[in-house]
Image (cartoon, rainbow, N blue to C red; front, top):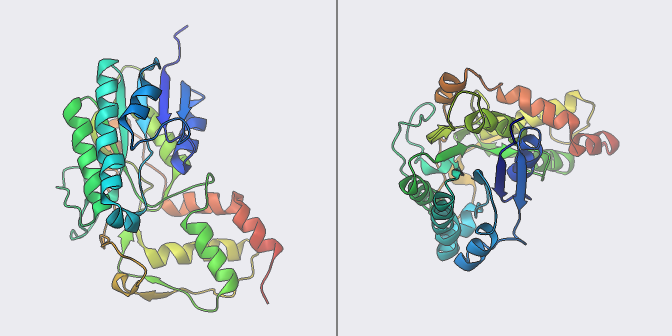
Length: 305
């Protein structure tokens, strides 16, 4: 009997990290590291946590993902999102281990009409996007056999995200508006974890390398995503103060300090060509999430009059 591969997940307590720990437990021996185990701003902490471990794969979803905070804390952003992946890639190379960096749709500037493919040239417009792009380059420069996976608009059961936030808003506020000019691909972290497995563990095929986009199929505006959330929980029996979300512009969101790409939708065609798997539509994944999540139960238990 073949021994299951050992996979280290750096960032195991995060939303995507939790999903990967659960999913890979069925096909591998996952080893989860959290912030308590490794400080990505400290090379000594990274080396101390990883050097003693024996593993064949490493996945790095941990990052400084607060887009506006990255603008203020640029040194930390590049240390965590660019330099830490470089050092981790060096350690993986010494161990002959395959590394996967989880990256972002924010490496693009948003100027393209339609979904971005892996062949499109990145041109980030924020410190967050630039630091993640540098991390991509560092990981692939260390070993071309490594993998960069870009994800988009992640949500899931591990931690509250946009779906829970917009439902909470609809429970208490009388009017809601979201940008109707920002496009992306809502992606379930559970689906993304499922989709990642065949990229790394597939009989008769070496682990994938280079860049792959990993997201649910289809795209939408931010307003359409929010409206879909409300429609799902309302149809499930929730009584909301707001049933229809108005549209505004990305430029109208005064709270944003960093520039965001107006379009960061990703094409998953390359993934389907390699694996033969077509990710399910974002609306189906969102419905499953909301109908099984605590936020829907809360809505049903606390109707608003």
